[in-house]
Length: 209
Image 1 (tube, rainbow, N blue to C red):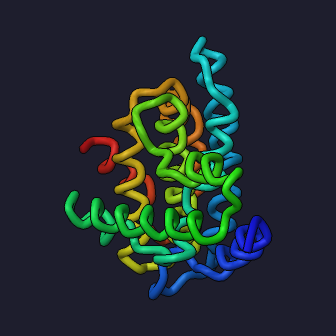
Image 2: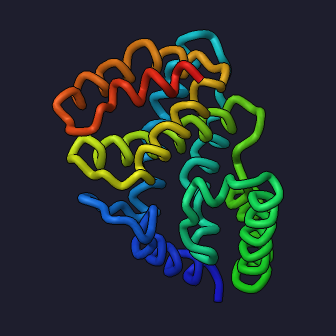
């Protein structure tokens, strides 16, 4: 019982492999993904602040570091499946949030429950911090897929991952998205020029949609 149960459960995130069931040259755990999302979000938030946007850093760190905690209970579900329909996405989110709430009720001391309910909630919303989380989450999806494509992985799943994440990012109206498209993405595409997969073409098609 108590906070120990929460701390001990974090190890489970190291055992959950993202994009299950597909061949990967480099496997990534949910724990690794969560750490990278925090790193992306820090720089994305810095770009927002450079453009005069106020950022609630405490909220940002809470939602980015804990955004996938619920996968301890339901595992990593592939993005194309998760977003097959709004109804399915809503049902999965409801199950995940219900399991997290049950965990808090059963294991977290009473004085910490409000804090854990705030920190482990679904953080993607229309706030600046929620949108930064969305971009950071999709940015890691781009990089995970990019690495596989760069190494010549012909699994269609990774092309779908790369395209869908890029399409989602470009639709978000943030200064950091403009910076990513203008300065970071071109470097990424240039690095993948020797890949047996035509990453440049896939990128141009995604941006044109």
